[in-house]
Length: 497
Image (cartoon, rainbow, N blue to C red; front, side, top):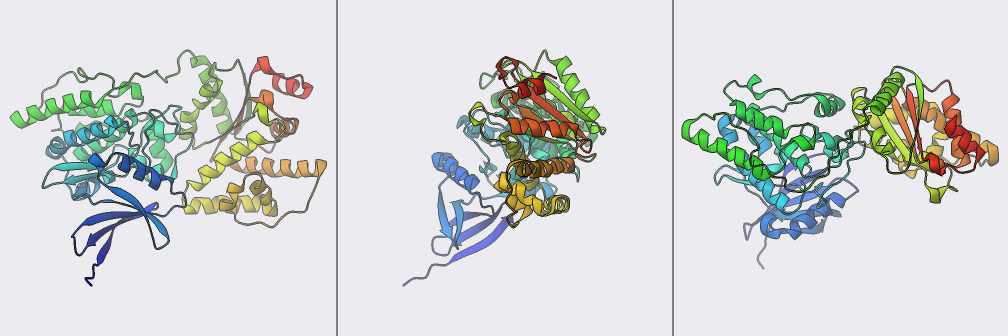
C-alpha cells in the first residue's frame, strides 16, 4: 500500500486563529487549514459559507474536524501578503501604481457579490509578484447585508486591525456600516503602500479610534514630495470621515486610478484633474447624518463634559416614538471616545414590565462585552477591582448576567434573602459597580431608554443612584415617551420632576 504523507507548516498565528499550510506528498496539492482559537465558531462558518457560495471566484472549501478542533480548509493562494511586502520595504509610488488598481478591481468583484469585507487590511491582501495576481482573503467578519450595526464597542476581531477600520466600525459614530466602509480601509492600505506607514498610529487603542473619528490624515507629500497631488486627493477622498463624502462606487475610483496609471506609464507624471467625475452611486442611500438637532446635541455634549469633569448630571429626554431620541443620545459617542469614556445602555420593554431591572441587565451585558474585548491584563485589572469593591457579593452580578462568570470567575452561593433585604443587597452591589466604573479615567454615560415602561423596583434604584453623593463622573440619560406615561404616580413623578 502506498503511503501518502501530509506536511503541515504554521504560516500565521494570531489571537483568533492558527493558519497551517499543508502539502500532499502524492498529489503535491497545497491547502490552507484555518483553526479557530475561539469558542465561538460563527466567523469560521461564515467564511466557509461565503467561499462555498462563490467557488468560481474564491475556490473550494470545506469544514473538517481534526484533533478535536474545527478547521476551515481552502485552496492555498500563492504569493505574499501585502503586509509582508511592506515589511520588506516594497512601497512607494511605483509599487502603488502597479498594484492599487488591481486591489481595487478585486474588491469591486467582491462587492458585486453583495459582500462587504469589513476586515480589509494588508494582511488579507495576497499578491503574487510573478503573475501580478491579487487575491483578497479572510471573510470571517464579512456580511451579505447591505447595512450592519457596529454598536458602541469594538469587536475583539476588529481590535486587532485598529489602524485599518473605518470610523463607523468603531461603534462611536452612530452610523450603520455599508460597502463604503471598505473604501475607507482601502484608503488606509493605499496610504501605507505609498508611505510605508498608516496615517494613524499609537500604543493606546482609544487614541487610534479617536483619530479615525476626528483627525485629518496627514498629506502624503509630508512623506514624499514626489507623490502627485492628485494621488493625495484620491486617498483623502477615500479617507473621508463621513461615508457620504467618500467615493460612491469602485467604478468611479477605478476610473480615476486608471487615468493616473495611463499618465504615469506615459510620462512618469500625473497632472491634476477633477476626481469623481465618473463616480455614480452603486446603491441608493438615505443619509445617516443628523440635521436640525444642533442645539439639542450641544446640550448633550455640554452635559457630558460636566460629568467628565467630576459632576453627576441627569438629563431627561422626552418625545414621541420615532423622532430620533435614541439617535441623538448616541451622537455623544465622539466626545466620549476623546475622554476615554464608557457608554452603557439598556431599555425597558412593555412586555417585560414584570421583570425587574431588565434595562440594567442589558447594560451589564454591554459592559461584560466591553471588558472581554480588552487585553488579558485589562480584564484581570477589572476582575481585581470588582473583587476588592464587592468581595463575595460579586456573585450578584453573575446571577444578573451569567456572562460575567467569564470575567469574575466562580463564587459560592450567597445566603438567601427575601423582600426588602434582597432588594437592598442588589442595590448596594449595582450602586458600587457603577461607582467603580464612573471615574476620572472612564467617565460614564448610562442611557436608559423607554423609561415609561420601567418597573417600580428599577425606578427606586434609579432614584437611589441619582441621590447617591458617592457617584460622580456620570451622565444619566433617561428617555421616555411622554404621551405613553402610565398612571403610576411613582413613574409620573420620577420622569416629570
